Image (cartoon, rainbow, N blue to C red; front, side, top):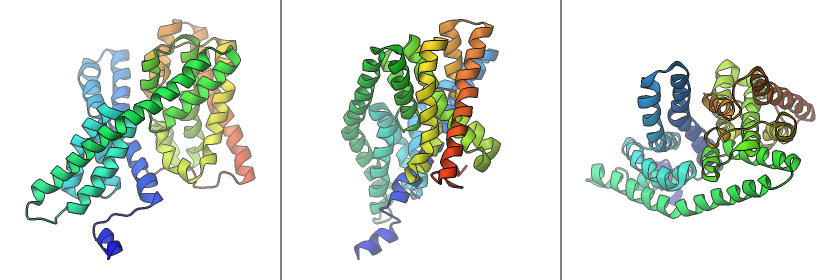
Length: 337
């Protein structure tokens, strides 16, 4: 009886539905709002297009929560009224707990919205009301824990900045790179910590290693579209695949661990807080590097090497070894774009 009700309501309690489907859709919602807005902003700043910088980019940032929530609801196959109502849930949850808050709150709101959907004669009132109330309450509950996690990660990064450059470069690069790929805002953490100088440079390299790393090792399966979506968009698109096979993350993490110290000790790469946690997304990390270090052929060469060429080479090298070992199999990095 219970299983029959859940099936009738299209509520599937499974790893695939809540992690693979929901996280995959979440990444698309993030790309269609915040990340595309970031790309517009970078283009607008470069070519002085006010429409991009003053209108589209700010609205895209504002729409991030609703876009993520609607995308997750779509991935969970929510009925129309439930899906549309999640826009309010996403707006509230993004303010209270960032992308992770949106994810948790939307899961709860959608499934409870499904339970009451089309069960009463006042469905047009009851379904949105239940979806919105449960989602916002969930966001209020989850929010403090999300910020607690971000604060803990921030503490790790702050402590790492006090270490000698070799260790600091490796730790900051790996930790910030991982948070970029997770549904946690690496940019928000770097801004919160006001991360700058060498530590910010290492953070940028770690983010680039994740984005460029996943872009190149999955090229054979995702083509040019996947290369661009991950390379200047977000490596979070790979989260459903990481959950299925965490070993696909090894090449990017290895690249960030190697290049972090190279950044701090050899190239002395720096960045500003707003660029530190963005990597190659909209080329914000590269713009920030130039803002911190100034223009010049040496700076441009360092950016090209540490943000693009070396992350690609190291990731491809490690991925090739893992494929020979059978740790990464055909289809493991395939995206549903």
